[in-house]
Picture 1 (tube, rainbow, N blue to C red):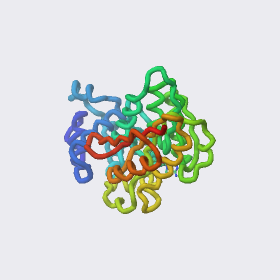
Picture 2: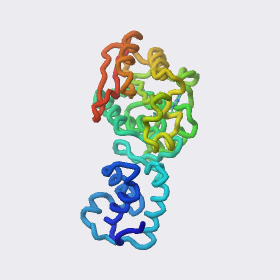
Picture 3: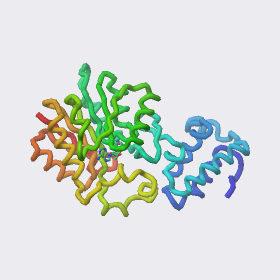
Picture 4: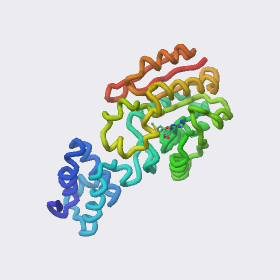
Length: 289
Ligand SMILES: C[S@@+](CC[C@H](N)C(=O)[O-])C[C@H]1O[C@@H](n2cnc3c(N)ncnc32)[C@H](O)[C@@H]1O
């Protein structure tokens, strides 16, 4: 299929026609905007103000090439190599999860709890692209922030992102299921984690573009125990949190009650469960006294 004409706005119907079988309408529109901004630098305001802007033959070809990859089901963030998280543009690739809007809500919770004038020590477990660690350092510049991940490839992306945004973050390669290096870090005031939380049984419910393209190490719990990472993170938090320190977790909506029970059994207090914008149980905050 070719474009109906060479106007910039023809990219939208072209995207709808090509990707209609893969994504809902609104998602396709979002992807078309991201593609236009990535390829030509035109943002939504420009598109609305200059709908008759013409594309050259070679510009239209660039859209067609990009579409070839999108049609394989590859998420647009991997095709263009970047994603937005809070106010940050981050590099992402096949080794890093694409940051999600619900994770932005978790970061906002932490930032809203932040007491002005304090300099919290923060550790992000399973940092991936570094999105949580970077956003926290940007919004709480006096914080001392570290990020840990088992994947050296993900850490390499996280550290490039930190350099790009000139944010000082310490990255540590370690396995939270069998921690060695992070056991030696100084005590922390805030421990945050968005660990892998999809169980194998839930795999078939994932959209194919997630299951086939996002790193399985970032998505799946490597056992049938959906609480595996939470047990280890909670036990690590008990060792590492300063008195009164807080643990923030992104969770699988199915395990909210069980994680609350676990936290209370392990001596955490002020345990609070929150829903995300889609009204799903998505995050938990708890204090360790
Ligand atoms: C759900 S992703 C979260 C990535 C990022 N924090 C975000 O919110 O987009 C989980 C991350 O945990 C990492 N991970 C998986 N198993 C791990 C382990 N045993 N120890 C430490 N990190 C692990 C994965 O590599 C992945 O980057």
